[in-house]
Each structure stands twice: as structure tokens, then as C-alpha cells.
Length: 67
Image (cartoon, rainbow, N blue to C red; front, side):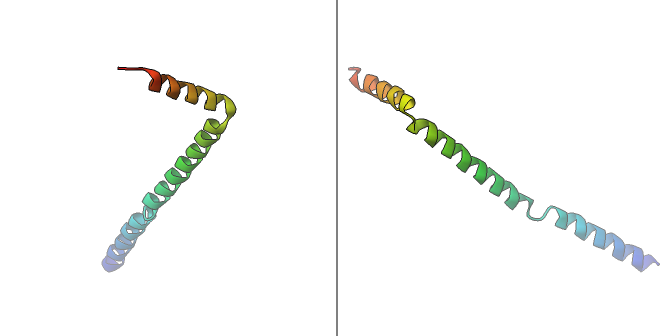
């Protein structure tokens, strides 16, 4: 009976450890997908006509300032 209890405890500990296996990889995958989606949204915004005009204006103003 004592050996069975020890074996069961060992099995439970193994299961607890395995339950977290792969979580880091999954978190990196979700983070990477979110970063790609954010980059796609920013790219779409920056390609729009109104934003192009604002960015061009800011860059032109910044380059025309003399020191």
C-alpha cells in the first residue's frame, strides 16, 4: 500500500509538471501573431492617403528647418 501511494504521488507530480509544458511556446506564438497583426494594421494606416500627406508634411518640415 505504501509503495502504491508513493508511486501515485510521483505520477501526480509528473502530471503537474507536464501540464505547463509548452505554455511558453504557446505564449510566444500568440505574441508573435499579435505583433504581426499590429504591424499589418499600422501598414494599412500608413498606406492611406491622409496619413501619407501628414507624414510627408512632417518630414518636409523637419528637413527644411536649418540649424
